[in-house]
Length: 275
Image 1 (spheres, rainbow, N blue to C red):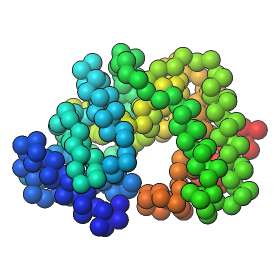
Image 2: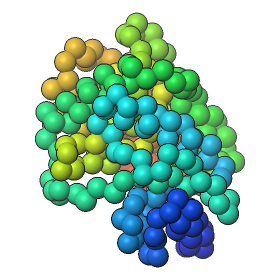
Image 3: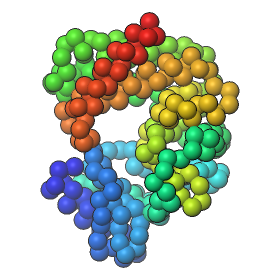
């Protein structure tokens, strides 16, 4: 968010905490992209703030509540409701002090993800399919107004890669279930109670290999029963999707344009090797 938006979003978070009976006078920015993540003090609560146009907050809260009920390794909600203030959507979560700056061991990462998937098989909520997310990326690539800096040759390459890998993953025949959608290291916290997943707004249905594609490569070595060819296809599909997001003119990820260029190069190498 831009500075002015971030100030308004921060005030919306503080006001939301007050409405819930929490004392919040200060806020430290933990992450600022298309959404704002804040640590509120002195109540020591984490607030996630998105523009009102984001309609996934209630879905994220519902998923988190259901997963917590079945004992999944997920961050706890501080408030069970979604707050709507001043054109922003606010959700409140427990804040976890990081216990280490080291990466979570691959075996622990895989164990937490396997446990999350087991819990997700017990959660019955209407959710999008992974192909819906691919379609969103495909639409973005096709829209020159939204991706004005994407060259025509790269646009064709990215679109064809998204189409080809979607067909490959969809036709795998593997069982499908509710997934996290983006269980990358940034969405797995190292806490005193063990690894906990956050950020459930991207939950979708698909094969577990789609989730594993977002984890470090070595994590798959500790996850039982996976289809390694499908995992390779999912990794290529994932790279194509996140590359597409970086060319969105409204993308606010720091260094996003540079990453878009780098990931296009990586994608060409990956497709050349698979071909």
